[in-house]
Image (cartoon, rainbow, N blue to C red; front, top):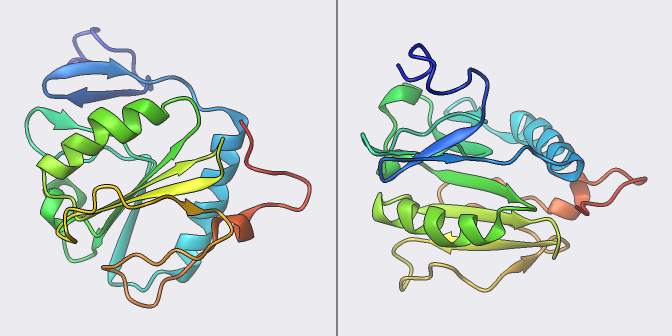
Length: 173
């Protein structure tokens, strides 16, 4: 609606957070490369029962529309019907937006009952894992890119972010 009215540029990257439009910076090369590699890995590894949305708006309610790098949910749902409690995992790749991703965005996901949220910090090469309901472990201590990660709500999926790197590159911003 806002795009049709000319208030927002089509194709622009933005999020709606508590009714406020937040313009997001463009993604750097390391961000795009990690997203490409993680997308390829997840497509190959996920069972048909799990839907994967890369770079899609997650409509948590009328006032919260974050645009995470990935979100996963049960495939029997339609993406437009997915709400926080339905989400199996949200993944955010962070190089320039770490404070926002760990602060305001994490609080919004917690408020909307997203049960698992990962923030992949490219600069420190670690993942901040947020788990709702596990003794309020929001967040848990960071996990190095060299250590295995396993989403709690998706059985059989384990990955190491370091394994996704190309030999000639490293996830450095």
